[in-house]
Image 1 (spheres, rainbow, N blue to C red):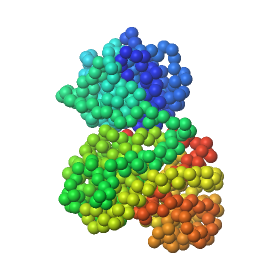
Image 2 (cartoon, rainbow, N blue to C red):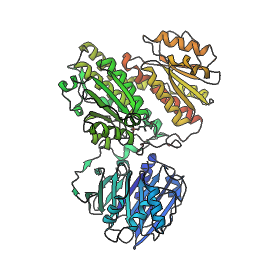
Image 3 (spheres, rainbow, N blue to C red):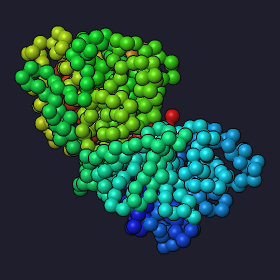
Image 4 (cartoon, protein in one colour):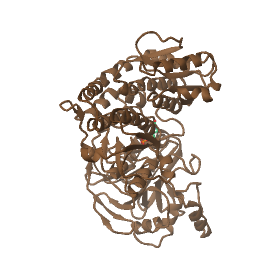
Length: 606
Ligand code: AGP
């Protein structure tokens, strides 16, 4: 999942393209490049490394008011100068930048090589520019259309023709492409983050669409040539919302933003008159919701884990059987889609390929699907057509923090809504709404514990491995804690249901392997204390996430006490210190916190 950017207008393209790449760097950051067209010539510069490396070594010759650019997350061909985009044909007339995977690249490459084409990279993407060059002479649009008819796979693609710099051709199939509408200038990007500095007015291309983009506007059509109409939408985010605001990392900024992002997710959705919640985008009447017999939640990575917390909330509060499953596993097993099941797709970016494909599978089989999404207008949101927007604001750090918490809050809103149209009492509803309103202040209290958490992180940073364990709704908290630590510190961390330890993992407990235990003061407290004892008996270092109260009956190496909420909502608070723990361990290990190795913010390839 790479980031592509394009510009055509009256201004010099390079500074605009570099700024766009910087804003998309969380999509991939192993190499970058730019191509500009001027005086019927292409000038191209590309390099291994980050956008700042590209910017530092940009040659003066890179000029022009039409250009395309790319920041890469390698799928085919290792990160190096040769495999960086843009790619050109032999005569350097055409240049392309591509986000996605050309699945039949090997066959196409063999055919093109047999016809005398020389390849300069190991990438799948390079076949696209040679196919375009090999098409019969004609408009660039027709050449691209002809080439894409031979391609199977996914693409967000931008194409430049040195001989016709008055237009850029873009096409989409599976990977997001957004057009930004300016004053006699147009912008192209993989997501709106790269455009907000220049315009709030955008159009999203749909799968199978191609667009001719000129300085004075654009036309869209299908790959078969049928014209399509696009209605511009307005981006809510401003360029300021992408600023670091004095924090040293986006991850730390986004952790700090949680009291506000929770307030935005709650805003206008608490109905204190009927002690229930109001979710405008649900577009499902109570009668239809009452027919729901089961809930299936789909997502990847942290979105899946927040779905696990969501499943607990829906089962506990609405008494509807609920289960969360990784979207990729769901779609590969040819699932049976049931009419009385409500499917919920969770995705902060709204572009994760496996989750999108799961939504399309459910719809193809006539199922009912909702989206819980952060990025407004994103593909999954448009594909679902109804659901809950998080309004958590842009999340730039690759590791998700505030959107994880806001997703869990969104599930609490949905669970209360489903519960109150079933057996949940008004008093229980009222207690839960009060507890939701108290969350932002309670998160503030936890953030104030940072110095203590940072101290514990120094100890953890010395370790190679770590365990996270919890029971019931504490287990997803352990899963997310382990994922965060893995992602940013590269410490091997695993999460286990606490009762599973004695069925194997306990063998790995040793003085070198610390365990973080999620131990809320609830009806499972005693059970979790026995887990502490099991680990202590094997000299395993212990860190407990719990609530304030009597000292724990087992000696631990460190304890973090979070404020108490309603039991069903406790997991939302217990997760916050684990975000800070992972952040400070990564800081102690001098990791690249916002751009961890080998990862990217939204996974738009299979
Ligand atoms: C979480 O920190 C990771 N960035 C990753 O697991 C992420 O949750 C996953 O890729 C899903 O992304 P999405 O929410 O944008 O669909």
